Image 1 (spheres, rainbow, N blue to C red):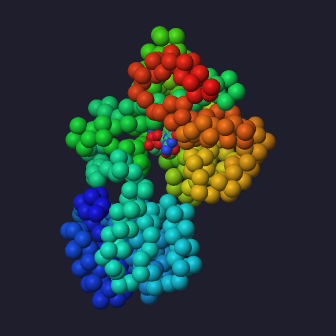
Image 2 (image 1 turned 90 degrees about the vertical axis):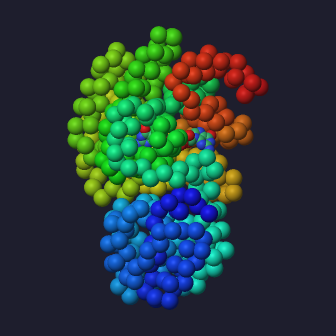
Image 3 (image 1 turned 90 degrees about the horizontal axis):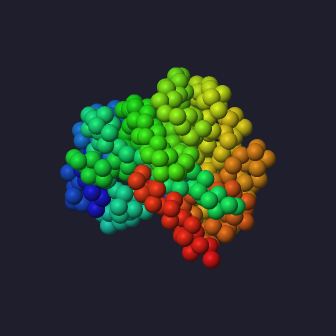
Length: 404
Ligand code: G
Ligand code: G
Ligand code: MN
């Protein structure tokens, strides 16, 4: 049973009343209290943003008279639906898996598909299994983050940057750290960025959050500097912030309060949604570039980070997504993609960072591929600011152990 889904509403969409009734019945038996249903796609889209508690799971037929499944998935994205989706299969497997891929490309979270009428055991297994795979046992946060809670958390400074070192492959020295937001909420407990970053984007609080984090980063950098440690910090910036024309100026204002200067900060950009209009982000990225701030393209090879962005946007660094590093199941394909990504990045004079290096074997592989820097659990996990000093001092010893 998925705790997250249980607290939220489940929406069942099908044009056949009989299917609606039996599915509702099955869901209630599985312990879902808030089950609502819609006869048409139009009705579903109306309900999706008006239901309380919010809809966290949609079970939908792919083929309905008013809107076909492809169109429906597009509309889910348009209305900003961020919960999970399970598709009903009346269709052949090929069609279903294409629909699943399409939905994932739209950044919709499809848990899978099941055939009608729903078998309670199959549904229950699907919801449990996928929830674990996606979030891990630790990461599932069955919390509903409201705008008020998030806003006051940002204002109260509850969200802290943690730091994960990046290591230069040739010198094996730390080349910088990435700031990763961590929120320990007195009300909600530990909340992970996978949950609160999309919420901050939704509530238009992401810029406020980013600037609050940058302020903390600058302060920590100052503390490290007093201990003789100078580390460049990479800050994650959501593509949403790049729609803000004066983002570069606001950033500059914060950074200039300290001596460290722009040189000490770099930005990592991930595109979490399809951007329809690239003009504004491009303008903002170019202005950052003119201020000599280094830019990295994050999670390369996933979501919407792709080749055309390398062509159109001025990046200095490419971060290979960890799914390619850890792609044990399909190493051959991963290797092919890694190799050509490295080759392209080199031609474009970009620094290449391999993310998610967990073992010596991973390290050797990315070294051989020609990656410049490595970030991963093998060398260091994300840690709070005050542990960085200890880690840096311990690194020479640790390094001997790791590379003997
Ligand atoms: O440690 P990890 O679970 O930290 O981070 C999960 C995801 O959240 C990563 O993809 C990372 O890019 C994103 N993330 C972490 N911190 C921030 C942040 O400060 N801003 C933005 N926009 N994304 C962040
Ligand atoms: O912003 P980005 O998606 O690059 O954030 C990096 C994410 O990867 C964070 O969630 C961080 O905690 C996670 N991470 C960093 N190193 C490793 C690793 O070696 N293994 C795994 N599984 N995750 C990692
Ligand atoms: Mn990142």
